[in-house]
Amino acid sequence: MTNAVDIENVSLVFGGEGNNPVLAVDTINIAIPKGQFVAIVGPSGCGKTTVLNMLSGLIPPTAGSVKRNGKEVDGPSRDVGYMLARSALSPWRTALKNIEMGLQIHGVDKATRRARAHELISLLHLDGFENSYPSQLSQGMRQRVAIARTLAIEPDLWLMDEPFGALDAQTRIKVQGEFINLWERSGESSVIFVTHDLEEAVLLADRVIVMTARPGRIKSDTLIDLPRPRVIDELRFDEKFKDAEHRIWKELRDEII
Ligand SMILES: Nc1ncnc2c1ncn2[C@@H]1O[C@H](COP(=O)(O)OP(=O)(O)O)[C@@H](O)[C@H]1O
Ligand SMILES: [Mg+2]
Image (cartoon, rainbow, N blue to C red; front, side):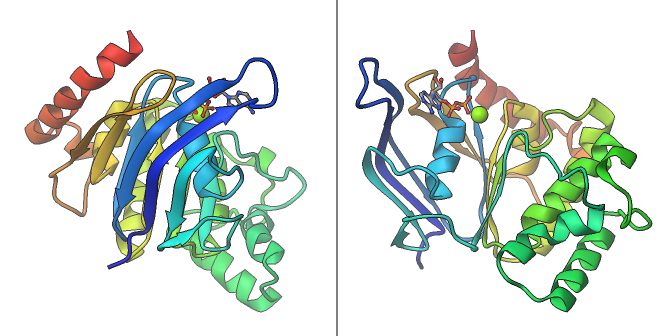
């Protein structure tokens, strides 16, 4: 079967024409089968966002090949939902209209847009807040609207860049739980979830990839053998979960400290 993602011998150099080229990503290889949830962790500046940018078609690799569904990436596509690290909502649009935005950009008709947005409102427990503006929503709600906006186009690849980084600990656990439920119900979608939080990576993912400090290389690649569906707020105390986290922490520690 064709992989969702094939990253083969990919390197990325910034500022190649200038005097100080920066090697951000150094010869990485990642193959992701369809339907897998992969988390990428690594120190700040190791190239995590750069990897997502290459996958989304925003920047081409300097060397190597980046493929989605067996085809070389050559630009943005509707099959990819990309939630940026600091993706802001439009302050002058209601929650519902924010969620519809991506669909509108892709030319989906109004009735279909509306129906899909309402469905996501309900899946993410935002009922009653359809007509609220971002400033009237809590931080956790705003984040759920941003998730809904990313997923409204029904992408088969979800690229998430530290989506819960700004949330307080309790809200984070709640939104993580909703997010993982949404994905577990979605069928065949593949996810690449970038986070600096190892606990979050192990709780959510089927597989955790650790990147080295710059230039970013693959340091370790570990399958997480925990059953699904996952109950995030319970799993945190599970011995198997803690063992997995500890094993990967030993890899990550050297890169951070
Ligand atoms: N447009 C750019 N021009 C030059 N250097 C960049 C650019 N974008 C990122 N970098 C550098 O590339 C490295 C990787 O960046 P990034 O992918 O954002 O890291 P991460 O997301 O892991 O924190 C960093 O050292 C960063 O400073
Ligand atoms: Mg980043």
